[in-house]
Image 1 (tube, rainbow, N blue to C red):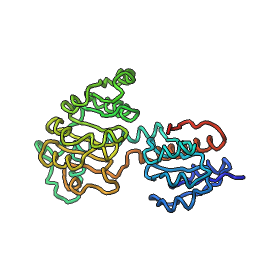
Image 2: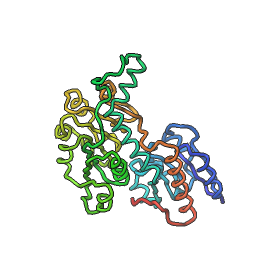
Image 3: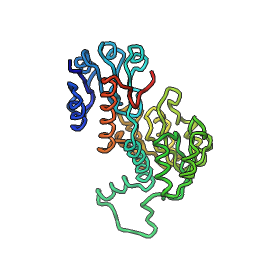
Image 4: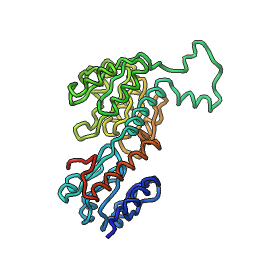
Length: 325
């Protein structure tokens, strides 16, 4: 009997072709957006494989309803959107999709936000659009602050943080990082990039740019709250390309309004898809709609990786990127 698969995310045609070539009967959410729980429940009762994405919550109710389910292949490096305990209880494998292009694209986003924020790209674009540019002046200082040769502090030194360090090396930045694992696992990348481990508080005090790039957990909710923002160097910049819940946005707004920080850039937001209107009102803030790894190259690689692991499991093989419950 042909095995059934449902994708709760819109898939590239190449990925649909891959699944169908493996002899699977595929039904997929065919538009951009996120299906409701009711819509997913309508399609998963008889499936053996489910493809999800980080924007799709896979609840205990869904997993319990899919009595034949063997694998949830999640398109995303994290799996916070999946009820892992329920999956483990029902012997459902869960996989994720780390990948070179996803890592590179997210690191690019962090670097792009750092440059756009520091150089005032967005507000200067508005000046041009409003036709209020009065002409070049030697002391105009419209271009903001130089990033090269400044101090960068990366919080979270996984694959993306390390790739950002490689990119920032080209800007001759003085790089420090903090990771809960300590410095031991990172000796090779330290040697490659010149980045050095420092404690969290020291990194905040010394850096011109603080980039958040860690997984979100209950323990690091509002990691950047009033006390931590107060520890940051006067006139520093904060960039969040991790998860929205890591930053206390109300406290960030106060720090920006009071002039403690020179600016902030957020690709992830505390109440997505709602964007904080107070932050959006500030000229020294750059906000993007969670585009971290949203490139054609990264998303195709991630979708293909999810499909490949799904095929492996349904063929009775071990997945390449399995996640413990």
